[in-house]
Image (cartoon, rainbow, N blue to C red; front, side, top):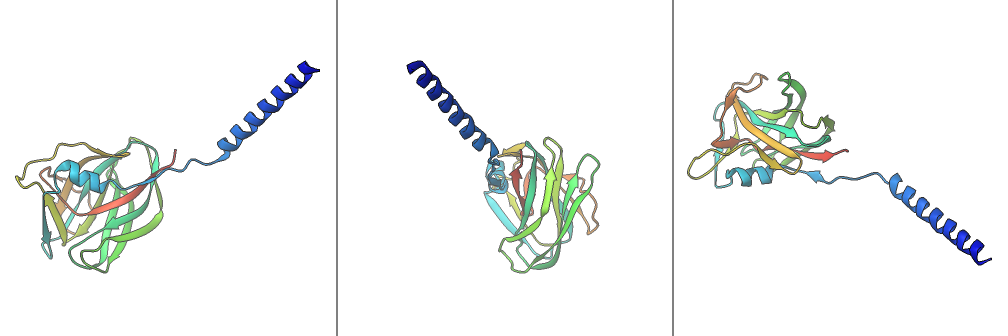
Length: 194
């Protein structure tokens, strides 16, 4: 009788463990939303000096980046020193330097971050992308001694590979490289998906 009770108790315990484990497996994993910009500005040293440029010539400029995990962009964020009812933000696929996504944004208030909900944009782990904006208004961030940042700079699951710019309003991928400043303040929310 004792052996049967022990066996029954063991079976019940094992069944409870299996059921509780399977319940945990059914819960989807939720990853935190990340924004790379603050770490990038600090780690690059570009937090030391900021200059506002308003109506200073039109440029396409932004950051090349690589997601270190599979994830998605869920929101775009931008801050300008002036209003702009039709700011163009572009996500580029750097494998082909083609446009991956374009969003037109109404920046209605100067010096205030504008947040734009977008249809999720899935990014492939270790694939190179860029985010740029086209504007004649921007913040220029640099070091007080004007020295260059050392790339890459990693913030969470996003690696920033460099900064590029080109003059003009055409939606063409920028070709000029600068390592001693960052102009822009265009960013995104990123969420790992596996």
